[in-house]
Image 1 (tube, rainbow, N blue to C red):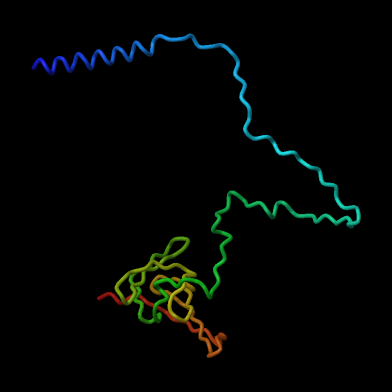
Image 2: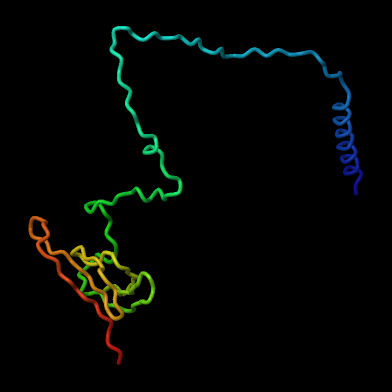
Length: 173
């Protein structure tokens, strides 16, 4: 180590010691009480007398239990979906006849089926699911087929008939 480096270290050590000693001494803390003035005062509250010419109004009774939400119910339970603004699922892209039934799971409380869309994607469907462009609903799932009811509408949009479509499993070879 050079002489210059040693001097530099001693000077740095000396400066640190001086700062440490400067913080140690000094005046004793005072024990006087200090009063603090608030910058803002509380505004004066004026009492307003009701006009005596007005007629007394009748109080409405409101059922408070209807205003409170049940914390144990999902907040999604209150969401109502209208048929006009509902977002269509991928299963509502085309006619029911172009879907292919791939598999059926029965023997459980809610049977399910797997259908393949024309684009090759597979979807799991249950009873009540929408499928097809004619507002079709899955009515039943049997051991080898899925039964779908579609609505047939006239030009004005009124339902004139319902059609039952059956998707069946392909035969085993």
